[in-house]
Image 1 (tube, rainbow, N blue to C red):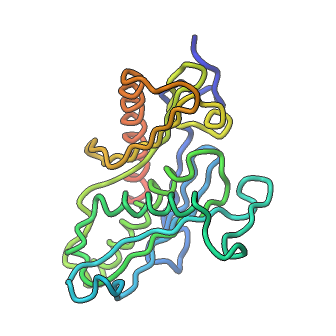
Image 2 (tube, one colour; image 1 turned 90 degrees about the vertical axis):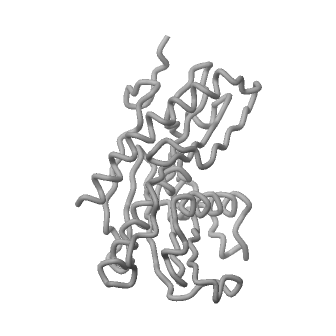
Length: 241
Protein backbone atom coordinates (compact mmCIF):
# COMPACT_ATOMS: atom_id res chain seq x y z
CA UNK A 1 0.00 0.00 0.00
CA UNK A 2 1.36 3.43 -0.94
CA UNK A 3 2.12 5.63 2.03
CA UNK A 4 0.31 8.99 2.07
CA UNK A 5 2.90 11.78 1.95
CA UNK A 6 2.81 15.56 2.20
CA UNK A 7 1.67 17.02 -1.10
CA UNK A 8 0.51 13.59 -2.23
CA UNK A 9 4.04 12.67 -3.32
CA UNK A 10 4.92 9.22 -4.61
CA UNK A 11 7.59 7.28 -2.65
CA UNK A 12 10.21 8.11 -5.32
CA UNK A 13 9.24 11.79 -5.76
CA UNK A 14 11.22 14.84 -4.65
CA UNK A 15 9.62 17.74 -2.87
CA UNK A 16 9.21 20.82 -5.13
CA UNK A 17 12.69 22.24 -5.75
CA UNK A 18 13.58 25.79 -6.77
CA UNK A 19 17.03 27.38 -6.95
CA UNK A 20 17.32 31.15 -7.31
CA UNK A 21 20.85 32.09 -8.44
CA UNK A 22 22.43 35.42 -7.51
CA UNK A 23 20.25 35.78 -4.42
CA UNK A 24 22.93 37.75 -2.54
CA UNK A 25 24.36 40.43 -4.82
CA UNK A 26 27.42 41.10 -2.64
CA UNK A 27 28.65 37.48 -2.79
CA UNK A 28 30.90 36.18 -5.57
CA UNK A 29 28.36 33.40 -6.08
CA UNK A 30 25.06 32.73 -4.33
CA UNK A 31 21.78 30.84 -4.48
CA UNK A 32 18.60 30.43 -2.48
CA UNK A 33 17.49 26.80 -2.58
CA UNK A 34 14.03 25.65 -1.54
CA UNK A 35 13.22 21.96 -1.12
CA UNK A 36 9.63 21.81 0.06
CA UNK A 37 9.56 23.67 3.38
CA UNK A 38 13.35 23.76 3.72
CA UNK A 39 15.08 26.95 2.51
CA UNK A 40 18.80 27.65 2.61
CA UNK A 41 20.85 30.67 1.49
CA UNK A 42 24.18 29.53 0.03
CA UNK A 43 26.97 32.01 -0.68
CA UNK A 44 30.48 31.52 -2.05
CA UNK A 45 33.17 34.06 -1.11
CA UNK A 46 36.72 34.17 -2.49
CA UNK A 47 39.82 35.01 -0.48
CA UNK A 48 43.13 35.52 -2.28
CA UNK A 49 45.10 33.37 0.14
CA UNK A 50 45.10 29.88 1.62
CA UNK A 51 45.45 28.55 5.18
CA UNK A 52 49.00 28.67 6.49
CA UNK A 53 49.41 24.91 6.23
CA UNK A 54 48.80 25.14 2.46
CA UNK A 55 50.87 28.23 1.68
CA UNK A 56 53.50 27.89 -1.02
CA UNK A 57 52.09 24.67 -2.50
CA UNK A 58 50.39 26.36 -5.45
CA UNK A 59 47.03 24.78 -4.58
CA UNK A 60 43.78 26.30 -3.44
CA UNK A 61 41.26 25.31 -0.79
CA UNK A 62 37.50 25.02 -0.48
CA UNK A 63 35.70 24.87 2.83
CA UNK A 64 32.20 25.38 4.18
CA UNK A 65 30.34 26.75 7.16
CA UNK A 66 26.76 25.92 8.13
CA UNK A 67 24.27 27.45 10.50
CA UNK A 68 20.58 27.53 11.32
CA UNK A 69 18.92 30.88 11.92
CA UNK A 70 17.25 31.17 15.35
CA UNK A 71 13.67 30.90 14.02
CA UNK A 72 14.41 28.24 11.36
CA UNK A 73 12.73 25.48 13.38
CA UNK A 74 9.86 27.49 14.88
CA UNK A 75 11.13 27.42 18.45
CA UNK A 76 14.05 29.81 18.71
CA UNK A 77 17.41 28.11 18.31
CA UNK A 78 20.27 29.70 20.24
CA UNK A 79 23.04 31.03 18.01
CA UNK A 80 26.35 29.18 18.24
CA UNK A 81 28.17 32.45 18.89
CA UNK A 82 26.33 32.88 22.19
CA UNK A 83 27.60 29.45 23.27
CA UNK A 84 31.18 30.27 22.30
CA UNK A 85 31.53 27.41 19.83
CA UNK A 86 29.49 25.47 17.24
CA UNK A 87 27.71 22.35 18.45
CA UNK A 88 28.68 18.88 17.29
CA UNK A 89 25.91 18.66 14.69
CA UNK A 90 26.97 21.94 13.10
CA UNK A 91 30.61 20.85 12.88
CA UNK A 92 29.63 17.49 11.37
CA UNK A 93 27.42 19.08 8.71
CA UNK A 94 29.84 21.78 7.63
CA UNK A 95 32.62 19.21 7.30
CA UNK A 96 30.30 17.09 5.15
CA UNK A 97 29.52 20.06 2.89
CA UNK A 98 33.21 20.92 2.51
CA UNK A 99 34.21 17.31 1.75
CA UNK A 100 31.42 16.99 -0.79
CA UNK A 101 32.35 20.14 -2.72
CA UNK A 102 36.04 19.27 -2.71
CA UNK A 103 35.06 15.90 -4.16
CA UNK A 104 34.41 17.55 -7.53
CA UNK A 105 37.23 20.12 -7.38
CA UNK A 106 40.72 20.34 -8.87
CA UNK A 107 42.41 22.43 -6.19
CA UNK A 108 45.53 22.87 -8.37
CA UNK A 109 43.41 24.77 -10.92
CA UNK A 110 42.17 27.12 -8.20
CA UNK A 111 45.62 28.53 -7.46
CA UNK A 112 46.50 29.84 -4.00
CA UNK A 113 43.06 31.13 -3.08
CA UNK A 114 40.26 29.91 -0.83
CA UNK A 115 36.56 29.68 -1.58
CA UNK A 116 34.30 29.71 1.46
CA UNK A 117 30.79 28.33 0.98
CA UNK A 118 28.41 29.51 3.71
CA UNK A 119 25.05 27.80 4.12
CA UNK A 120 22.48 29.51 6.32
CA UNK A 121 19.19 27.73 6.95
CA UNK A 122 16.17 30.05 6.84
CA UNK A 123 13.57 27.32 7.37
CA UNK A 124 14.15 23.70 8.30
CA UNK A 125 11.72 20.95 7.31
CA UNK A 126 14.18 18.08 6.92
CA UNK A 127 17.16 17.61 4.61
CA UNK A 128 19.00 20.83 5.43
CA UNK A 129 22.47 19.33 4.89
CA UNK A 130 21.41 17.91 1.54
CA UNK A 131 19.88 21.22 0.43
CA UNK A 132 23.08 22.98 1.55
CA UNK A 133 25.26 20.75 -0.63
CA UNK A 134 22.94 21.05 -3.62
CA UNK A 135 22.58 24.83 -3.37
CA UNK A 136 26.21 25.23 -2.30
CA UNK A 137 27.32 23.69 -5.60
CA UNK A 138 25.37 26.33 -7.54
CA UNK A 139 26.91 29.16 -5.48
CA UNK A 140 30.37 27.62 -5.97
CA UNK A 141 29.90 27.20 -9.71
CA UNK A 142 28.80 30.84 -10.04
CA UNK A 143 31.85 31.98 -8.06
CA UNK A 144 34.19 29.97 -10.30
CA UNK A 145 32.47 31.38 -13.38
CA UNK A 146 33.02 34.91 -12.03
CA UNK A 147 36.73 34.21 -11.44
CA UNK A 148 37.07 32.97 -15.01
CA UNK A 149 35.26 36.00 -16.43
CA UNK A 150 37.65 38.26 -14.53
CA UNK A 151 40.63 36.38 -15.96
CA UNK A 152 41.74 35.11 -12.55
CA UNK A 153 41.26 31.46 -13.55
CA UNK A 154 42.24 29.91 -16.87
CA UNK A 155 39.77 27.07 -16.39
CA UNK A 156 37.13 26.06 -13.91
CA UNK A 157 38.42 24.03 -10.96
CA UNK A 158 35.16 22.07 -10.95
CA UNK A 159 35.45 18.61 -12.47
CA UNK A 160 31.77 17.73 -12.30
CA UNK A 161 28.50 18.41 -10.51
CA UNK A 162 27.36 17.28 -7.08
CA UNK A 163 24.10 17.13 -5.17
CA UNK A 164 22.69 15.38 -2.12
CA UNK A 165 19.35 13.95 -1.11
CA UNK A 166 17.86 12.19 1.89
CA UNK A 167 16.01 8.90 1.80
CA UNK A 168 14.83 6.43 4.37
CA UNK A 169 12.48 3.70 5.47
CA UNK A 170 9.28 4.92 7.12
CA UNK A 171 6.64 2.44 8.17
CA UNK A 172 8.49 -0.24 6.24
CA UNK A 173 8.35 1.78 3.00
CA UNK A 174 11.51 3.20 1.32
CA UNK A 175 10.95 6.91 0.63
CA UNK A 176 12.89 9.64 -1.18
CA UNK A 177 13.51 13.15 0.19
CA UNK A 178 12.15 12.94 3.73
CA UNK A 179 10.44 15.93 5.27
CA UNK A 180 10.71 16.49 9.03
CA UNK A 181 7.70 14.38 10.12
CA UNK A 182 9.01 11.47 8.02
CA UNK A 183 12.58 11.91 9.18
CA UNK A 184 11.59 12.02 12.84
CA UNK A 185 9.72 8.67 12.61
CA UNK A 186 12.00 6.82 10.16
CA UNK A 187 13.31 3.34 10.97
CA UNK A 188 16.23 4.09 8.64
CA UNK A 189 17.54 7.54 7.73
CA UNK A 190 20.15 8.11 5.01
CA UNK A 191 21.83 11.04 3.28
CA UNK A 192 23.43 10.33 -0.09
CA UNK A 193 25.93 12.64 -1.79
CA UNK A 194 26.42 11.83 -5.46
CA UNK A 195 28.04 13.33 -8.55
CA UNK A 196 26.00 14.08 -11.63
CA UNK A 197 27.63 11.07 -13.26
CA UNK A 198 26.33 8.76 -10.51
CA UNK A 199 29.52 8.41 -8.44
CA UNK A 200 28.98 8.12 -4.70
CA UNK A 201 30.90 10.71 -2.67
CA UNK A 202 29.42 9.94 0.73
CA UNK A 203 26.64 7.80 2.18
CA UNK A 204 25.42 8.38 5.74
CA UNK A 205 22.92 5.74 6.85
CA UNK A 206 21.58 5.04 10.32
CA UNK A 207 19.15 2.37 11.44
CA UNK A 208 17.09 3.87 14.26
CA UNK A 209 15.07 0.81 15.29
CA UNK A 210 15.89 -2.23 13.16
CA UNK A 211 19.13 -3.11 11.33
CA UNK A 212 19.36 -1.96 7.72
CA UNK A 213 19.31 -4.87 5.28
CA UNK A 214 21.50 -4.92 2.19
CA UNK A 215 18.37 -5.12 0.04
CA UNK A 216 16.92 -1.97 1.61
CA UNK A 217 20.26 -0.16 1.24
CA UNK A 218 20.36 -0.97 -2.46
CA UNK A 219 16.77 0.22 -2.82
CA UNK A 220 17.59 3.49 -1.04
CA UNK A 221 20.58 4.10 -3.33
CA UNK A 222 18.35 3.60 -6.38
CA UNK A 223 15.88 6.10 -4.94
CA UNK A 224 18.71 8.54 -4.23
CA UNK A 225 20.01 8.35 -7.80
CA UNK A 226 16.54 9.22 -9.09
CA UNK A 227 16.47 12.22 -6.75
CA UNK A 228 19.98 13.36 -7.70
CA UNK A 229 18.97 13.40 -11.36
CA UNK A 230 16.09 15.72 -10.54
CA UNK A 231 18.30 17.97 -8.42
CA UNK A 232 20.93 18.12 -11.15
CA UNK A 233 18.27 19.34 -13.59
CA UNK A 234 17.33 22.10 -11.11
CA UNK A 235 21.01 23.05 -10.76
CA UNK A 236 21.50 23.20 -14.51
CA UNK A 237 18.39 25.34 -14.87
CA UNK A 238 19.65 27.79 -12.25
CA UNK A 239 23.11 28.04 -13.82
CA UNK A 240 21.59 28.67 -17.26
CA UNK A 241 19.77 31.81 -16.05
